[in-house]
Image (cartoon, rainbow, N blue to C red):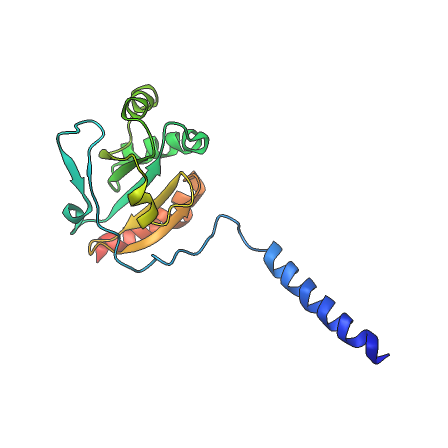
Length: 175
């Protein structure tokens, strides 16, 4: 009887871990950057390469950073949601064109519309690495002090806007 007890206990422990794991949302990957200062960057703007966009210039306002690319299929899925959000003028959305050719990014925005206040080019992906980008799209909510308060992995949806992002933005804008 005793020789079956240990394997049974191990089996039940593994089954418990599996049960808990299956209940988790795969889009909710914890980020070590939450509640930490957003990594600083200074990149050329997509539409005007003679000008740069610096994250330091964003201090004092709540903003969203959306990492996107013209080659990203999921970015096409979230694009109408971002267009709708931009028309509401609730929070400025800044784009980070990730590992993309400038002409491809410009064409993609001209065809689908441009929800961004401006977009910066991260051609080599170094800024994406600093932000811990797993893949595109990813979206960050950054507060007035330059602290990352939320990270959305995968496409922004109307549901994620309604349930998480917009309530957080409203709360941060009051502070």
